[in-house]
Image 1 (cartoon, helix red, strand yellow):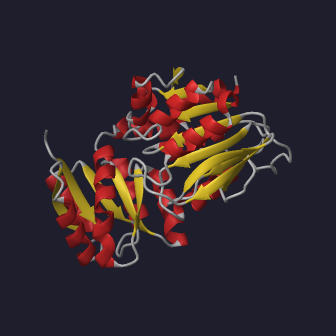
Image 2 (cartoon, one colour; image 1 turned 60 degrees about the vertical axis):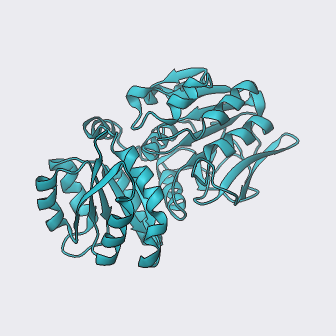
Image 3 (cartoon, helix red, strand yellow; image 1 turned 45 degrees about the vertical axis):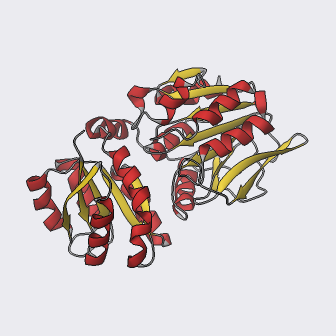
Amino acid sequence: MRKIKVLIVDDSAVVRTILARELDRDPQIEVVGTAPDPYVARDLIVQLQPDVITLDIEMPRMDGLAFLRKLMHYYPLPVIVVSSLAEKGSSVALEALELGAVEVIAKPGASYSIGDMSEQLADKIKAAAWVDMKSWLAKKAKSPALQFVAPRALSKTTDRIIAIGASTGGTEAIKEILTRLPPGAPGIVIVQHMPANFTRTFAERLNTLCRIEVKEAQSGDSVIAGRALLAPGNYHMLLRRSGSKYSVEIKSGPLVHHQRPSVDVLFESVAESAGPNAIGVLLTGMGADGAEGLLKMRQAGAHTIAQDEASCVVFGMPKEAIKRGAAENIAPLSEISQLILS
């Protein structure tokens, strides 16, 4: 198999050197070049024709967002944004996802610790290399953000639970599903593979677009009608039941499928706590996280849905679920909201 050609764009020489060294250790990846700013990157893209670009969004001469906007217009390529963990960085990184970046990864505070994230970055590069950018951007263009004022959640319990899991391409998929749900939709719990801090910014952004309340979950939060709870980055989320009421538990723990939060952890807790009162939805993403959990949900009597291949950015997680017989329904993204409600 031909190696995935990667171009690293970062204003730090130390970061460029460490990333290039660590990524080159992976037998499936070849770092073909590095660039200190978008102007150098522009020339190298034409010369080297990389498959994937890693992009720092806080750079001199031209900021990463301006470069990304131009890149998506003139020469669309899969881009993984490497951003700081700061609040400002997470907000800008989310904007980059809306502009067309396919993944986001948090940059550690110290340059010398960049190598620690190399395995995670390598996995995201492999996922990004499969993205059909023409199709990805076309889908985004057809799904403009709906502007709603989010109402307060209903102050009553829900007798149904909607559990959603996603990874690569999931931010757009989740947005499309949630913006189509009515204010009184059943309580929702969500795992999107995302770093710490980024999940809070993502939840806040969704809350301005949806007719339901969307928030980053905290331990003890009630799962109620009209509310969606998003698992915080770097923590697992589990559904708990006490009598007729549902809540979530947020906790640390080992990585599952190299992920924390993990979709499997959430789905397995939903199978145990909600059983036939739940609906499981597994969306676009690389790997197998969520496949076993969705199967356990179906075995517990829940309705289960997997996103179809044609509408996925990466048909990895849903494919694994379908292989296991975990998906009761296989549907395009545009139909999943209605399928949930029906």
